[in-house]
Image 1 (cartoon, rainbow, N blue to C red):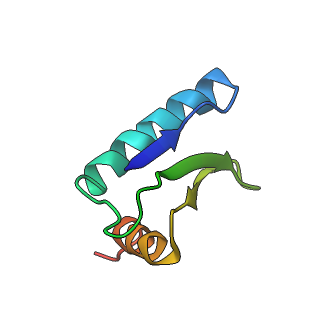
Image 2: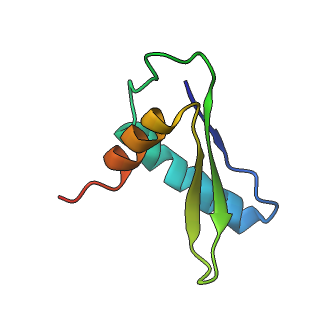
Length: 75
């Protein structure tokens, strides 16, 4: 199961994180790890350019790769 951490402290950042979470939920709907029973946590961090970037803490490297491929695939 994929869980999201959107509490960043600032009200505006929390709102942006929730919006980004909603987009990711649509993209990752139905994905789960076939071999692990541990949750994957996607948290959002502010980078040097003031953009929110996802930090993926997956249960295993294979599932992290699948998530990254799905989120960052080129059109």
